Length: 183
Image (tube, rainbow, N blue to C red; front, side, top):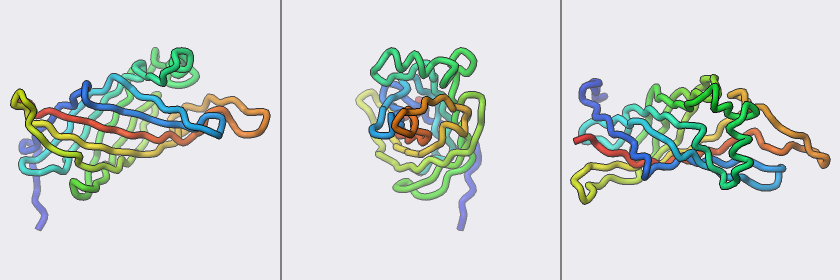
């Protein structure tokens, strides 16, 4: 029997930016991976009472908060060659449905980046629930996905003398979020 959960029953947990990370990796020179992260992330995760399976997810990331531990590369990634943060100040993800169990679920949704919206499926898991020392209910999830940067108009590259390109097309995303239930 399927249980119908109304919107009013879903409790929105606020993503705690100080305990959440959105990280990525991409091939560099076709021989290694460059890793980076976005420091500014906010959003909500909806949970039905008594359930550990997200009902909905909404996330916003500030692309200007990119950090690859190399200032010159970060400046290039913020430029019109890549994220063009002056024109596109937000990366947003909004779920359309969630399927599975807390141990293994898929979040179907739309990712908007660089002015382009495309569907993206995140593979997620519940990491745990706890009450913190201040009486707040917290829940943590992890998720991962792969995407093509070209699908979002991020096409800058440089051909290498030895063949291949400087920056790979496939981006691997790893997300770890902790969210707090409002009191």
